[in-house]
Length: 73
Image (cartoon, rainbow, N blue to C red):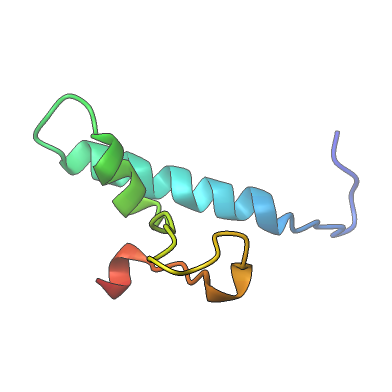
């Protein structure tokens, strides 16, 4: 039983996960196909694209790693 007296705890990670699950549910319910593709799931969850070093860049140098959101495309 939860304690009485307004001791609400906000778990920001759990709230973010719940929000992302909700976004997936909405996308799945609006989809024409039976399942969401991996690309569509990445788009809904705003997964950053992978970073690949350009010619001449040191792949161990993380200072040049910029993650791009699909919304920025």
